[in-house]
Image (cartoon, rainbow, N blue to C red; front, top):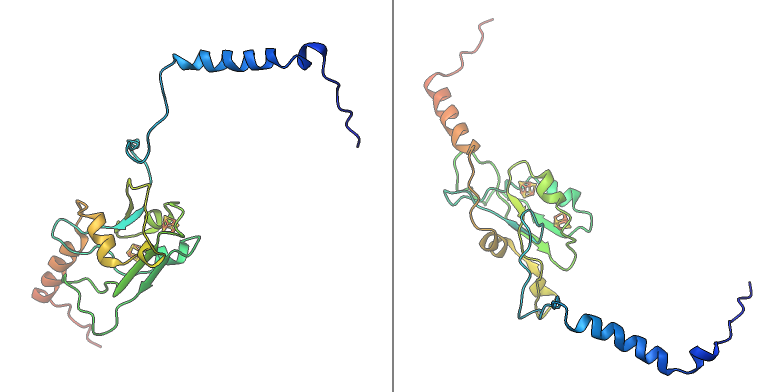
Length: 183
Ligand code: SF4
Ligand code: SF4
């Protein structure tokens, strides 16, 4: 396909009218309210519900909520999550909690803040917080380990405290042991 180039008109060839109309646009914006933000000195205040970087949380009793089920690792599209499940040497710090991650890492260079890990987590242990700007001096620094994720995530008020209820149920069962059916 051949596109014919249109010749410039006499008015366009004068050049100065184009400069003048450019200045007109500049002048029109010159007195308007400035919208440019001096980032990073000035930061955005993100709206409620904004989904930034994912962090791990503890409950109000200071217990890690993650039970190392690895669902988030499985669904994470860019494979940013890497969980090391507990071996026999790992002791849980809450009664009736079977598992805790030995290590839990999120590669923030890979994470796309999609929120699937939060959606899929059965324990409400991982939340996307408001951090939108993460930086570091090396790639290694951008892999956040469990301690760092927990420190950044802080406390999430757990209204259900299911492990506490399970502990109560377990004690109740000890008091009233299930009778084995006689043949
Ligand atoms: S927010 Fe998305 S990309 Fe980031 S860790 Fe969670 S599932 Fe993976
Ligand atoms: S954060 Fe949630 S989904 Fe991921 S391993 Fe822990 S309990 Fe499972």
